[in-house]
View (tube, helix red, strand yellow):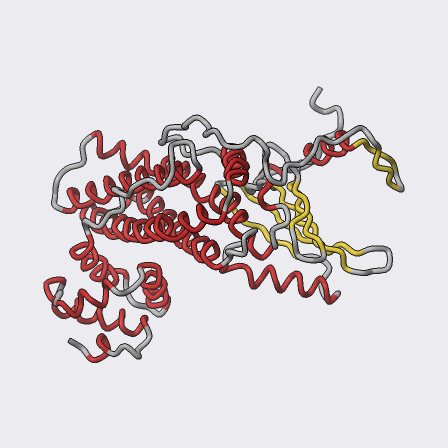
Length: 408
Protein backbone atom coordinates (compact mmCIF):
# COMPACT_ATOMS: atom_id res chain seq x y z
CA UNK A 1 0.00 0.00 0.00
CA UNK A 2 1.34 3.44 -0.91
CA UNK A 3 2.76 5.44 2.01
CA UNK A 4 0.56 8.41 1.02
CA UNK A 5 -2.54 6.28 1.53
CA UNK A 6 -1.60 4.94 4.96
CA UNK A 7 -0.13 8.18 6.30
CA UNK A 8 -2.79 9.34 8.76
CA UNK A 9 -1.12 12.75 8.91
CA UNK A 10 -1.78 13.42 5.24
CA UNK A 11 -4.80 15.47 4.22
CA UNK A 12 -7.86 13.54 3.17
CA UNK A 13 -7.54 15.02 -0.31
CA UNK A 14 -4.00 13.66 -0.64
CA UNK A 15 -5.04 10.25 0.63
CA UNK A 16 -7.96 10.13 -1.80
CA UNK A 17 -5.65 11.16 -4.62
CA UNK A 18 -3.32 8.29 -3.69
CA UNK A 19 -6.28 5.90 -3.64
CA UNK A 20 -7.30 7.01 -7.12
CA UNK A 21 -3.74 6.52 -8.40
CA UNK A 22 -3.58 3.04 -6.89
CA UNK A 23 -6.90 2.12 -8.51
CA UNK A 24 -5.71 3.54 -11.83
CA UNK A 25 -2.71 1.26 -11.71
CA UNK A 26 -4.36 -1.89 -10.40
CA UNK A 27 -8.10 -1.51 -10.81
CA UNK A 28 -10.88 -2.18 -8.32
CA UNK A 29 -9.52 -5.68 -7.73
CA UNK A 30 -6.81 -4.20 -5.51
CA UNK A 31 -9.25 -3.74 -2.63
CA UNK A 32 -7.28 -5.15 0.30
CA UNK A 33 -8.20 -4.84 3.99
CA UNK A 34 -6.27 -1.62 4.51
CA UNK A 35 -7.91 0.02 1.52
CA UNK A 36 -11.33 -1.02 2.85
CA UNK A 37 -10.57 0.41 6.30
CA UNK A 38 -9.70 3.81 4.83
CA UNK A 39 -12.98 4.07 2.93
CA UNK A 40 -15.06 2.71 5.82
CA UNK A 41 -13.51 5.19 8.28
CA UNK A 42 -14.10 8.22 6.05
CA UNK A 43 -17.34 10.17 6.33
CA UNK A 44 -18.99 10.12 2.87
CA UNK A 45 -19.54 13.88 3.00
CA UNK A 46 -15.84 14.51 3.72
CA UNK A 47 -14.98 12.16 0.87
CA UNK A 48 -17.32 14.10 -1.42
CA UNK A 49 -15.60 17.39 -0.55
CA UNK A 50 -12.17 15.85 -1.14
CA UNK A 51 -13.26 14.64 -4.58
CA UNK A 52 -14.60 18.10 -5.41
CA UNK A 53 -11.22 19.61 -4.52
CA UNK A 54 -9.42 17.07 -6.70
CA UNK A 55 -11.80 17.74 -9.58
CA UNK A 56 -11.12 21.47 -9.27
CA UNK A 57 -7.40 20.70 -9.43
CA UNK A 58 -7.80 18.84 -12.72
CA UNK A 59 -8.21 15.20 -11.71
CA UNK A 60 -10.30 13.68 -14.48
CA UNK A 61 -13.83 12.34 -14.14
CA UNK A 62 -12.77 8.89 -15.38
CA UNK A 63 -10.21 8.64 -12.59
CA UNK A 64 -12.72 9.69 -9.93
CA UNK A 65 -15.14 7.12 -11.28
CA UNK A 66 -12.60 4.43 -10.37
CA UNK A 67 -13.06 5.43 -6.75
CA UNK A 68 -16.82 5.38 -7.23
CA UNK A 69 -16.58 1.82 -8.59
CA UNK A 70 -14.58 0.86 -5.51
CA UNK A 71 -17.25 2.28 -3.23
CA UNK A 72 -19.90 0.39 -5.17
CA UNK A 73 -18.05 -2.88 -4.62
CA UNK A 74 -17.58 -2.18 -0.92
CA UNK A 75 -20.86 -0.57 0.10
CA UNK A 76 -23.32 -1.47 -2.62
CA UNK A 77 -25.73 -3.15 -0.24
CA UNK A 78 -25.49 -0.75 2.71
CA UNK A 79 -28.95 0.59 3.56
CA UNK A 80 -30.91 2.21 6.37
CA UNK A 81 -34.27 1.09 5.01
CA UNK A 82 -34.94 -1.22 7.95
CA UNK A 83 -34.75 1.37 10.74
CA UNK A 84 -37.22 1.01 13.63
CA UNK A 85 -39.57 3.99 13.87
CA UNK A 86 -38.96 6.18 16.92
CA UNK A 87 -42.51 7.54 17.19
CA UNK A 88 -46.10 6.67 16.32
CA UNK A 89 -47.73 7.45 12.95
CA UNK A 90 -48.72 11.11 12.79
CA UNK A 91 -45.71 12.31 14.76
CA UNK A 92 -43.38 14.57 12.72
CA UNK A 93 -40.42 12.25 13.39
CA UNK A 94 -42.37 9.21 12.21
CA UNK A 95 -43.20 11.00 8.96
CA UNK A 96 -39.58 12.04 8.43
CA UNK A 97 -38.36 8.49 9.01
CA UNK A 98 -41.04 7.11 6.69
CA UNK A 99 -39.83 9.50 4.00
CA UNK A 100 -36.29 8.23 4.60
CA UNK A 101 -37.40 4.74 3.62
CA UNK A 102 -39.14 5.82 0.44
CA UNK A 103 -36.27 8.05 -0.70
CA UNK A 104 -33.76 5.25 -0.15
CA UNK A 105 -36.01 2.75 -1.92
CA UNK A 106 -36.28 5.00 -4.96
CA UNK A 107 -32.52 5.61 -5.09
CA UNK A 108 -31.81 1.90 -4.75
CA UNK A 109 -34.05 1.43 -7.78
CA UNK A 110 -32.12 4.00 -9.81
CA UNK A 111 -28.78 2.49 -8.87
CA UNK A 112 -29.96 -1.06 -9.69
CA UNK A 113 -31.27 0.19 -13.03
CA UNK A 114 -27.89 1.76 -13.78
CA UNK A 115 -26.14 -1.50 -12.90
CA UNK A 116 -28.35 -3.43 -15.32
CA UNK A 117 -27.76 -0.90 -18.10
CA UNK A 118 -24.03 -1.03 -17.53
CA UNK A 119 -24.18 -4.83 -17.75
CA UNK A 120 -25.64 -4.45 -21.24
CA UNK A 121 -29.33 -5.04 -20.51
CA UNK A 122 -31.69 -2.87 -22.63
CA UNK A 123 -33.95 -0.39 -20.86
CA UNK A 124 -37.62 -1.42 -20.81
CA UNK A 125 -40.70 0.76 -20.37
CA UNK A 126 -40.48 0.58 -16.58
CA UNK A 127 -36.86 1.66 -16.62
CA UNK A 128 -37.62 4.67 -18.79
CA UNK A 129 -40.51 5.60 -16.50
CA UNK A 130 -38.22 5.48 -13.47
CA UNK A 131 -35.76 7.85 -15.11
CA UNK A 132 -38.62 10.16 -16.11
CA UNK A 133 -39.92 10.12 -12.53
CA UNK A 134 -36.56 11.05 -11.00
CA UNK A 135 -37.08 14.81 -11.40
CA UNK A 136 -40.61 15.01 -9.91
CA UNK A 137 -39.69 12.54 -7.15
CA UNK A 138 -36.60 14.45 -6.01
CA UNK A 139 -38.45 17.77 -6.31
CA UNK A 140 -41.13 16.38 -3.99
CA UNK A 141 -38.47 15.02 -1.62
CA UNK A 142 -37.27 18.58 -1.03
CA UNK A 143 -40.23 19.06 1.31
CA UNK A 144 -38.50 16.63 3.66
CA UNK A 145 -35.47 18.89 4.03
CA UNK A 146 -37.59 22.06 4.08
CA UNK A 147 -39.55 20.81 7.09
CA UNK A 148 -36.36 20.01 8.95
CA UNK A 149 -34.71 23.35 8.17
CA UNK A 150 -37.77 25.52 8.82
CA UNK A 151 -39.54 23.64 11.62
CA UNK A 152 -37.47 21.01 13.43
CA UNK A 153 -34.16 22.90 13.52
CA UNK A 154 -35.65 26.15 14.95
CA UNK A 155 -37.42 24.21 17.73
CA UNK A 156 -34.17 22.46 18.63
CA UNK A 157 -32.30 25.77 18.66
CA UNK A 158 -34.76 27.03 21.31
CA UNK A 159 -33.20 24.38 23.54
CA UNK A 160 -29.66 25.60 22.71
CA UNK A 161 -29.04 22.71 20.31
CA UNK A 162 -27.38 24.40 17.36
CA UNK A 163 -24.43 22.23 16.26
CA UNK A 164 -26.25 19.12 14.97
CA UNK A 165 -28.89 21.10 13.00
CA UNK A 166 -26.15 23.22 11.40
CA UNK A 167 -24.20 20.10 10.43
CA UNK A 168 -27.30 18.45 8.97
CA UNK A 169 -28.14 21.58 6.96
CA UNK A 170 -24.63 21.61 5.50
CA UNK A 171 -25.16 18.02 4.42
CA UNK A 172 -28.51 18.99 2.88
CA UNK A 173 -26.62 21.36 0.59
CA UNK A 174 -24.29 18.56 -0.50
CA UNK A 175 -27.27 16.27 -1.12
CA UNK A 176 -29.04 18.94 -3.19
CA UNK A 177 -25.93 19.44 -5.31
CA UNK A 178 -25.67 15.70 -5.94
CA UNK A 179 -29.37 15.46 -6.80
CA UNK A 180 -28.91 18.31 -9.28
CA UNK A 181 -25.98 16.49 -10.88
CA UNK A 182 -28.01 13.29 -11.15
CA UNK A 183 -30.95 15.05 -12.80
CA UNK A 184 -28.61 16.92 -15.17
CA UNK A 185 -27.05 13.61 -16.16
CA UNK A 186 -30.44 12.03 -16.85
CA UNK A 187 -31.39 15.07 -18.93
CA UNK A 188 -28.28 14.61 -21.10
CA UNK A 189 -28.94 10.92 -21.70
CA UNK A 190 -29.98 11.31 -25.34
CA UNK A 191 -26.69 13.02 -26.19
CA UNK A 192 -24.47 10.37 -24.56
CA UNK A 193 -23.13 7.00 -25.56
CA UNK A 194 -25.16 4.23 -23.91
CA UNK A 195 -22.23 2.73 -21.99
CA UNK A 196 -20.95 6.15 -20.95
CA UNK A 197 -24.38 7.11 -19.64
CA UNK A 198 -24.83 3.81 -17.77
CA UNK A 199 -21.41 4.10 -16.11
CA UNK A 200 -21.99 7.73 -15.11
CA UNK A 201 -25.50 6.97 -13.84
CA UNK A 202 -24.24 4.09 -11.72
CA UNK A 203 -21.49 6.24 -10.25
CA UNK A 204 -23.70 9.26 -9.53
CA UNK A 205 -26.62 7.25 -8.12
CA UNK A 206 -24.29 5.16 -5.95
CA UNK A 207 -22.65 8.29 -4.55
CA UNK A 208 -25.98 9.91 -3.79
CA UNK A 209 -27.28 6.71 -2.21
CA UNK A 210 -24.17 6.48 -0.04
CA UNK A 211 -24.60 10.10 1.10
CA UNK A 212 -28.30 9.61 1.82
CA UNK A 213 -27.61 6.47 3.87
CA UNK A 214 -24.99 8.26 5.96
CA UNK A 215 -27.17 11.35 6.44
CA UNK A 216 -30.32 9.46 7.36
CA UNK A 217 -28.39 7.28 9.80
CA UNK A 218 -27.19 10.41 11.64
CA UNK A 219 -30.71 11.80 11.73
CA UNK A 220 -32.29 8.56 12.96
CA UNK A 221 -29.66 7.87 15.61
CA UNK A 222 -28.56 11.33 16.73
CA UNK A 223 -30.74 14.23 15.57
CA UNK A 224 -34.22 12.78 16.06
CA UNK A 225 -33.56 11.19 19.50
CA UNK A 226 -32.08 14.50 20.62
CA UNK A 227 -35.19 16.39 19.46
CA UNK A 228 -37.51 13.87 21.14
CA UNK A 229 -35.59 14.26 24.39
CA UNK A 230 -35.81 18.07 24.59
CA UNK A 231 -39.12 18.99 22.91
CA UNK A 232 -42.36 18.71 24.88
CA UNK A 233 -45.81 17.68 23.68
CA UNK A 234 -46.90 21.28 23.07
CA UNK A 235 -43.90 21.94 20.84
CA UNK A 236 -44.51 18.75 18.85
CA UNK A 237 -48.11 19.82 18.42
CA UNK A 238 -46.97 23.15 17.04
CA UNK A 239 -44.28 21.48 14.92
CA UNK A 240 -46.89 19.17 13.41
CA UNK A 241 -49.11 22.11 12.41
CA UNK A 242 -46.23 24.02 10.85
CA UNK A 243 -44.98 20.90 9.07
CA UNK A 244 -48.42 20.41 7.56
CA UNK A 245 -48.24 23.92 6.09
CA UNK A 246 -45.20 22.83 4.07
CA UNK A 247 -46.63 19.36 3.49
CA UNK A 248 -45.26 15.87 3.75
CA UNK A 249 -43.94 14.23 0.59
CA UNK A 250 -46.75 12.86 -1.58
CA UNK A 251 -45.12 9.42 -1.72
CA UNK A 252 -45.88 8.70 1.96
CA UNK A 253 -49.19 8.29 3.75
CA UNK A 254 -50.47 11.41 5.49
CA UNK A 255 -51.42 10.10 8.95
CA UNK A 256 -54.10 11.69 11.11
CA UNK A 257 -52.90 14.06 13.82
CA UNK A 258 -51.91 12.58 17.14
CA UNK A 259 -53.79 13.52 20.30
CA UNK A 260 -51.32 16.22 21.23
CA UNK A 261 -52.27 19.03 23.63
CA UNK A 262 -54.18 21.73 21.80
CA UNK A 263 -52.26 24.73 23.16
CA UNK A 264 -49.49 25.60 20.71
CA UNK A 265 -46.27 27.13 21.97
CA UNK A 266 -45.75 30.64 20.69
CA UNK A 267 -49.18 30.84 19.06
CA UNK A 268 -49.94 34.41 18.03
CA UNK A 269 -53.24 35.75 19.48
CA UNK A 270 -55.83 37.02 17.06
CA UNK A 271 -55.41 40.70 16.22
CA UNK A 272 -58.12 43.15 17.25
CA UNK A 273 -59.42 46.10 15.29
CA UNK A 274 -57.31 48.81 16.94
CA UNK A 275 -55.54 51.04 14.44
CA UNK A 276 -51.83 51.41 13.87
CA UNK A 277 -51.30 55.13 13.24
CA UNK A 278 -48.38 56.03 10.96
CA UNK A 279 -47.16 59.45 9.73
CA UNK A 280 -48.71 58.92 6.30
CA UNK A 281 -51.85 56.99 7.20
CA UNK A 282 -53.33 54.28 9.36
CA UNK A 283 -54.28 50.60 9.27
CA UNK A 284 -56.06 48.13 11.45
CA UNK A 285 -53.90 45.07 12.13
CA UNK A 286 -55.96 42.87 9.74
CA UNK A 287 -55.69 45.54 7.03
CA UNK A 288 -51.92 45.83 7.44
CA UNK A 289 -51.59 42.04 7.30
CA UNK A 290 -53.62 41.93 4.06
CA UNK A 291 -51.45 44.64 2.49
CA UNK A 292 -48.14 43.02 3.43
CA UNK A 293 -49.28 39.58 2.28
CA UNK A 294 -50.56 40.93 -1.04
CA UNK A 295 -47.33 42.66 -2.07
CA UNK A 296 -45.53 40.64 -4.80
CA UNK A 297 -42.37 40.55 -2.67
CA UNK A 298 -41.32 38.32 0.24
CA UNK A 299 -40.43 40.38 3.33
CA UNK A 300 -38.42 39.27 6.35
CA UNK A 301 -37.56 41.62 9.24
CA UNK A 302 -34.50 40.87 11.39
CA UNK A 303 -34.05 43.07 14.48
CA UNK A 304 -30.89 44.69 15.84
CA UNK A 305 -30.14 41.53 17.86
CA UNK A 306 -30.02 39.46 14.64
CA UNK A 307 -33.28 37.67 15.44
CA UNK A 308 -36.11 37.10 12.96
CA UNK A 309 -39.12 39.15 14.08
CA UNK A 310 -41.48 38.98 11.10
CA UNK A 311 -42.01 37.46 7.67
CA UNK A 312 -44.79 38.17 5.19
CA UNK A 313 -47.29 35.37 4.78
CA UNK A 314 -47.92 35.43 1.05
CA UNK A 315 -49.25 32.09 -0.26
CA UNK A 316 -46.79 32.44 -3.16
CA UNK A 317 -43.65 32.83 -1.06
CA UNK A 318 -40.44 31.99 -2.88
CA UNK A 319 -38.61 30.68 0.18
CA UNK A 320 -40.28 28.56 2.85
CA UNK A 321 -40.91 30.24 6.21
CA UNK A 322 -42.76 28.94 9.27
CA UNK A 323 -43.67 30.50 12.64
CA UNK A 324 -40.86 28.42 14.19
CA UNK A 325 -38.31 30.88 12.76
CA UNK A 326 -39.70 33.80 14.82
CA UNK A 327 -37.06 34.63 17.42
CA UNK A 328 -34.46 32.50 15.61
CA UNK A 329 -31.01 33.99 15.01
CA UNK A 330 -30.79 34.85 11.33
CA UNK A 331 -27.39 33.15 11.09
CA UNK A 332 -29.16 29.84 11.82
CA UNK A 333 -31.62 30.45 8.96
CA UNK A 334 -28.92 29.93 6.33
CA UNK A 335 -26.75 26.94 5.40
CA UNK A 336 -23.27 27.01 6.93
CA UNK A 337 -21.59 27.66 3.58
CA UNK A 338 -23.27 31.08 3.30
CA UNK A 339 -23.37 32.16 6.98
CA UNK A 340 -20.08 34.05 6.70
CA UNK A 341 -21.52 36.18 3.88
CA UNK A 342 -24.69 36.92 5.84
CA UNK A 343 -22.59 37.88 8.86
CA UNK A 344 -20.39 40.13 6.74
CA UNK A 345 -23.41 41.99 5.35
CA UNK A 346 -24.90 42.48 8.82
CA UNK A 347 -21.57 43.64 10.25
CA UNK A 348 -21.18 46.19 7.44
CA UNK A 349 -24.76 47.38 7.93
CA UNK A 350 -24.08 47.88 11.64
CA UNK A 351 -20.81 49.68 10.91
CA UNK A 352 -22.55 51.96 8.40
CA UNK A 353 -20.21 50.97 5.55
CA UNK A 354 -22.91 49.36 3.41
CA UNK A 355 -26.40 50.56 2.49
CA UNK A 356 -27.70 47.54 0.60
CA UNK A 357 -26.78 44.11 -0.71
CA UNK A 358 -28.37 42.39 -3.68
CA UNK A 359 -28.20 39.01 -5.37
CA UNK A 360 -30.01 37.23 -8.17
CA UNK A 361 -30.30 33.47 -8.46
CA UNK A 362 -32.37 30.87 -10.28
CA UNK A 363 -34.78 28.91 -8.06
CA UNK A 364 -36.65 26.07 -9.76
CA UNK A 365 -36.69 27.89 -13.07
CA UNK A 366 -37.57 31.28 -11.58
CA UNK A 367 -35.22 34.29 -11.72
CA UNK A 368 -35.23 35.61 -8.14
CA UNK A 369 -33.95 39.05 -7.13
CA UNK A 370 -32.91 39.28 -3.46
CA UNK A 371 -32.10 42.50 -1.64
CA UNK A 372 -31.06 43.37 1.91
CA UNK A 373 -31.44 46.86 3.40
CA UNK A 374 -30.31 48.15 6.81
CA UNK A 375 -33.03 49.75 8.92
CA UNK A 376 -32.09 52.88 10.86
CA UNK A 377 -34.10 55.16 13.11
CA UNK A 378 -34.33 58.94 12.65
CA UNK A 379 -31.02 59.34 14.50
CA UNK A 380 -29.28 56.91 12.15
CA UNK A 381 -28.99 54.12 14.74
CA UNK A 382 -29.07 50.60 13.33
CA UNK A 383 -32.33 48.79 14.09
CA UNK A 384 -32.18 45.68 11.92
CA UNK A 385 -32.38 44.33 8.38
CA UNK A 386 -35.17 44.10 5.82
CA UNK A 387 -34.81 41.19 3.40
CA UNK A 388 -36.81 41.30 0.17
CA UNK A 389 -37.09 38.54 -2.44
CA UNK A 390 -38.98 38.97 -5.71
CA UNK A 391 -39.74 36.63 -8.59
CA UNK A 392 -38.45 38.76 -11.47
CA UNK A 393 -38.88 36.14 -14.20
CA UNK A 394 -41.72 37.98 -15.92
CA UNK A 395 -40.24 41.41 -15.33
CA UNK A 396 -37.07 40.47 -17.21
CA UNK A 397 -39.15 39.64 -20.30
CA UNK A 398 -40.96 42.99 -20.51
CA UNK A 399 -40.33 45.11 -23.60
CA UNK A 400 -41.67 48.37 -24.95
CA UNK A 401 -44.57 49.97 -23.07
CA UNK A 402 -48.00 48.99 -21.80
CA UNK A 403 -50.39 51.78 -20.86
CA UNK A 404 -52.87 51.47 -18.05
CA UNK A 405 -55.86 50.67 -20.29
CA UNK A 406 -54.04 48.89 -23.12
CA UNK A 407 -55.42 45.50 -22.08
CA UNK A 408 -58.92 46.68 -23.00
